[in-house]
Image (cartoon, rainbow over all chains, first blue to last red; front, side):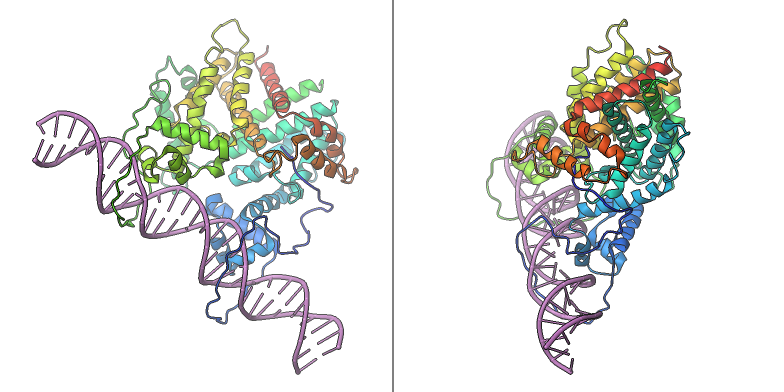
Length: 262
Length: 262
DNA sequence: TCGACTACCGAACACCGTTCGAGACCCGGA
DNA sequence: TCCGGGTCTCGAACGGTGTTCGGTAGTCGA
């Protein structure tokens, strides 16, 4: 986890959008040129590419993001994208960090006053991060994968850590605490973000009906063999993802408070 | 989360491997037949397909799993796989549930005695699940996605729940507790399972050296802007994934104990 | 012998990420 | 004015993927 490279000197990614973004792969193929027609040329920027990537991602999910569709939206050719990004993976890395910039901005005021409760501040940041990931499941998978290209991930990590710094703990305990919070937030959010097969999006079947149908099948199970499933069936049918997340987070933070001695 | 279908009546997946496993896609293409050579035909079974899938997954990771390689290992043709499974996604779903069967077997004795501490038993199951996922990162993404095809996922969920049933909590609290544990375990394990770019596997650069290099770059950061990163740099350089996970889990379980008033 | 059913096979298809030669555009210097 | 180099754009072609589908071989009961 977080086992990656260098670091970012500045706030936000106003980093130079320079260079042909060398790729790791090698090998030579070769393309022949067709008829040299006259065409209108598009002009992009790292910023515009990332913005359009995030928009496409939000509309169609990770599976819906492909270079041809993205190029079409940008009004350009596929090859141009590779001027800014060396691979699809790096595109996702950068897109993830791009939306994390907003998260960072949103939590900028948090923890400003020394008087505030550190754990409450930690909670606020965690909830904000969670909200950003739930309806962007792809974000979870690309969060904090390559800090060299993801300065905002590291800054968010630092921000969480600064709250924990105000608790009386050993360095190791602090490290574990932040790791746990991040793991829980990202894991839970990514998990919850998995869309129902084809129900809610089409609008035909409501989320509640969908859940109810699933629960009905749970209830059809042998009660002796699945006592717990029966026990929580009602709760599950009426549950709210955000509540569920916050309840778990509060359990974790309660444990942390206990460890910090108060 | 866990918003899916039907349920399994029996232990383990000795379910009927029948049917051409209808796919959702439609459309017609058409293949021409080549020279009708005489060939030795292979014969499979759902079990053997899943076993070989897991083996391939363990060797080459999710990216290395493709139908042609899998068919080659099975000594058959690509099309045959679709007799047992309707898509790559379902193959992964079933493969995930397949290895979860071993987890279920491993934790079978847990919670047998009423005298034991429920939270300790919960911890044992969680740790076992974690161990199964860490070196199988793909498992995390396919855990409990489609209970219709993943009976063992549901059974593991039930098993965790049965421990929580022994604590004095409301149904809602119990539901949230199990959800939190599952979210934390799966999320953390999937996160930790991401392999370092190309270092350790090739054997050239040791994991410690790799981590040390990353930490060096962290240390190069401005100390005033990144106090926490500096604070935990040593811990990170020497950290053990399993310890880190257990520390976070214990935080969560401490909060749960507190809630249960014991 | 005959059909129906099960299981297997692999060529063909659509689509995907990625490469690379070929330009277009801009601009400072000769 | 022409030159040359750097920056950026383009799209055909490549190798690879999941998936389909017509066809076929084996099996078994009638």
